[in-house]
Each structure stands twice: as structure tokens, then as C-alpha cells.
Image (cartoon, rainbow, N blue to C red; front, top):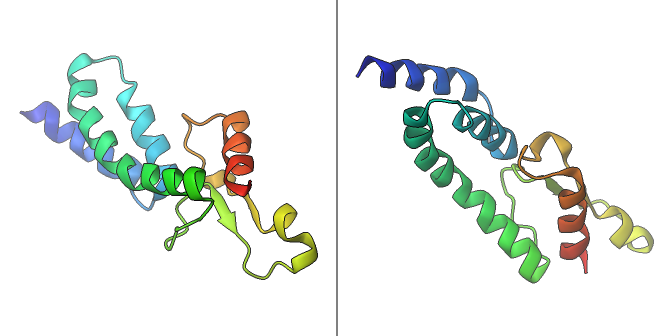
Length: 116
């Protein structure tokens, strides 16, 4: 229906040029729309778009390895870090990629957990 096309245009416009956590934040915000039909239509889109994020998150939490070739995750690695500051500076938060559904406190816990 026409409503779906309008929402598709809205999603395309809002998500244009976004990736990773920033894209997930936008989709999450759109899913919070008050119309149950819109939520029903957009939730599978958010779920599918979240799969790579949760894969990277799982790898980081379970193994402490960061596999983020497109720099879309909210944790970044500095490959230039010298050995004496390795754990303190090697990994840091990339705030622009932190999804809105991950609080600052949660992001810090995720960062610390993956480092240990």
C-alpha cells in the first residue's frame, strides 16, 4: 500500500549515508514509531540489519578479538599503539557508532570485557 511506500522512502532518506551503529540507531528510532503497523513492518528490518553488529559484539565479548573491517562497530582499534600503553590505548570507544540502545555505561562495560 501507499503507506508502505511512504515509510520505505522515509527509511531510505533517514538511513542514507549511515552505517554500523549509526544506522542501527536510526532504525531503532524509526521502530519506536507509535503506529503498530510501522513497528511490525520495520522490526524485521532492524533485526536483519543488527546481525553483523551482534556477530562483532559476540566475537569481542567471547574472544576479545575485534573483526570490524568496515569500521562500523562502536569499539575501535588503534594499530599504531606502542606496547607500554597497549591495553589502555589499543582499544577505545567510537562514540559515533554506538547504537542508541547501548548506554554509555554498557558501552564501557563491553569495552572492558573485551579487553580482559
